[in-house]
Length: 434
Image: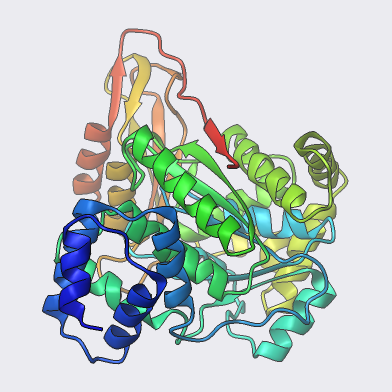
């Protein structure tokens, strides 16, 4: 078998066999084919696409390229959730303990952020003492005991995907739905999940800007999941404005605490209940999403969800005092109000630019080596559809630098106020269960 023939076959729009896909992945992972040949194949895939069977072959080959986490010693159906990313996406901090409060094991491996704000691990590390590293035995014991743990990803999980992504990043082939879907699902499957709920974002702050692309990505990932024996479904949710009100690591932890206590923003609460209900159903703990939602709402109201969060944080070394008293979380030196320059209605928010403003404050990483400031970020006071008066606070900037004029300029350009009425964008666009 030769790479030349595989490239030629895909260039001509033909379907690759499992053996051909595995050959390409194994040879590239082991440095036996050059980057220029793999680059040619990636471009052929980008232009000619892959069918579901090819995507499954690619996913399985990348899973088999490295470690596969064995979670069989954890009792019950292990449910994982993945978001394609966005601004103010605090869902994991809420969902993991919320779903675990119903006795469903959530054994989650998360990553760090690159861009707007930190990833789940960065957010959790804003809690004093919290540590993301557990031995495999401790991880399994903790999940069996508390039903939830969140740790960093192993260094040798899907190494083929890491190599391919680096190459896609410099060959203009990142935006290929078969490659995106296989990349995401290979990591979920290698992490040991039995069932997977996907949150596919659409809008100005999302990777997918167009609905057709988001639907295609969701359907491709659901098909991969089901064909690899994982009960999988997807939710397409809106990211035309930041989710919730907090953007920034410690600020998002505080918002997660509020949400678990029934005091969180309506959109974050609604998305967590939607995703959480699906997680409960795919775990086999409820027959309908309505039943699942009722049980989740009950555990927020009776305090069990927040108690599970406290137990989860304490089990991984986190300071419970900082959970009970969020003012003990990292605090920025300055809180600066961004005041409206005119009266009217907020008709548009550029979520991506607002996230970039938070990154300039230090809430996110420009490169992997950037050190995050866990205390800084933004708290939104107004969102799309809200009325605002001139001089009223649009948002509050949490900064360790008094001089934030550059950030203010970005924010003013990101929030459009007009003398008209608009409805907030729908939060949930579509459910994909095929």
